[in-house]
Image (cartoon, rainbow, N blue to C red):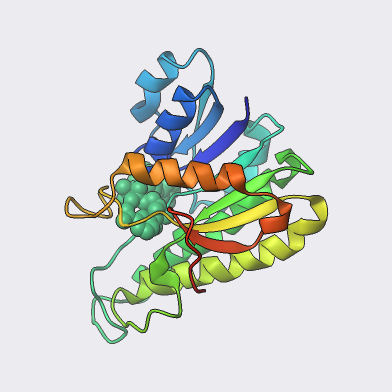
Length: 227
Ligand code: NDP
């Protein structure tokens, strides 16, 4: 029985992960902004689900996270994310400082500081970190739409590669993944992949991850993506 920490576990892909991991007998710590959304799951979890209230964009709250999580943690999933703009190119008037700042704060900076806060609790060697990024962060996509989201995920990718290098000596592996285009509030009803299918792929890739394969960028089917 492994212990997984999942940020943004209240809905979408994060909730899918929490539900699947519990069904498979794992221990889960879910961080959510509004803990009541997981009350039903907690009650049915035989003590295997713990919920922590956390806005990942709040530096003081993130700094306290390490004290609230009981180790050792086997897997940290940085899943919480925001998509604030639709199709806004680099010159779109709605793309103001606030959109950029919040996108970077939640999608790129928070995953680094959540990781840093939990590092003392991560199993070493053998701990694993999954960054839920997006293929929209890949510089190989020659696009100018959804600029703040794409730029924040590109920054996350850069940070994840740095972490993979820095944590390799401790035996902690880092995997960056695109979860597929998933039917959630963010992905919308027309998205190609169900939450269940995405979650299966993500969990399988994390289980296959070891220190020899740290630092990769994959989609939910396991195909490698270009940074
Ligand atoms: P949803 O919009 O359905 O859910 C977003 C999750 O992030 C919610 O749990 C939300 O919590 C949480 N969150 C947002 N802001 C914060 C914050 N400041 N502090 C804490 N939690 C926060 O999105 P998805 O489930 O689809 O996306 C999950 C991840 O997958 C994201 O990183 C996204 O970028 C990525 N992704 C999704 C794709 C898709 O097609 N769906 C494609 C590629 C990547 P709350 O309920 O409190 O708002």
